[in-house]
Image (cartoon, rainbow, N blue to C red; front, top):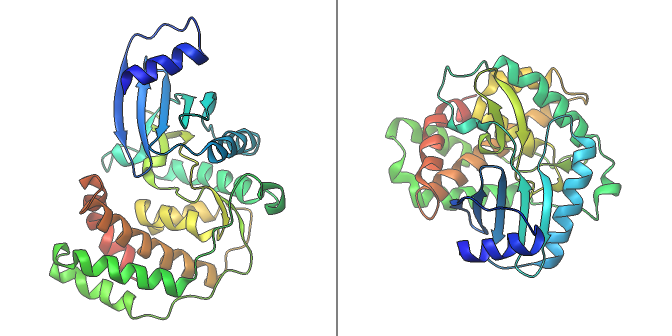
Amino acid sequence: MTGDIRALLARHLPGYRVRSINRLGHGLDNFVYEVNDELLVRRSKVADPQAGRQEVARLAAVRELSPLPVPEVVFADDETGTIAYRKLPGTPLNQHQNGDLDPARLAEPLGAFLSAIHGAVPGTMRDLAPLDVYPAPTLLQDAELDYRDVERHVPEAQRALVERFLHETPPDEPRSLRFCHNDLGAEHVLVDPGTSTITGIIDWTDAAITDPAHDFALIYRDLGPDILDRTLTHYDFPVTGEDRARIRFHARCALIEDLAYGLSTGPRHYADAALSHLTRTFEE
């Protein structure tokens, strides 16, 4: 596969000297490689030219909207489903240990970032991001199916918290939809560990016109309720009690999904993080 990456680099960046190519990992849909510690090359397992062109256009629009850095596309190859980005500085937030960062410094830039992204007129983004509307009752059913598969891995003292959630009435659907990152987990927030400064927001493949609660839910799940509350104080739009109920709901569904993923086909660290955040995510 690295030979294919070299060939693509030679085709799209003639004269570019390749000193190193390292495979960083893979997800459900893509393989990711680092080139010369300055480029990230993501290759789809199944090429989708239309989706690739849409992502390039979406990132160009997001770069105009976002007060935080987002990836800059260096080249895209529709035939192979490959997109190369200039590497942003910093390391993913989920790779930092507790105490390494000043969490208070994350809230203001996250609030400003989400204000800018959610402030985009949905109609202008429809050609750049799909509509993602998934009924809450169906999400809850999916969460229960995932949980039953991995229930034995959850400490007995925590199971009652999850069981209570699975028997609750799902929240009402949102009154309005906005353009969202839609996968704003800690692994997609880059941070300078020396200054606790956010240096970039990556992985926009799941961006959609959807419920803004999805973005806040992953802050709640990964960073906790205190950082969520601090972030909301820097958010430009009103957040009601109904909004907060949907944030909690989506955070809990997302945690169960990560737990099941990390214990099946995904990297184990997803499950470890889910278990470590379970109590604070499911407590009222």
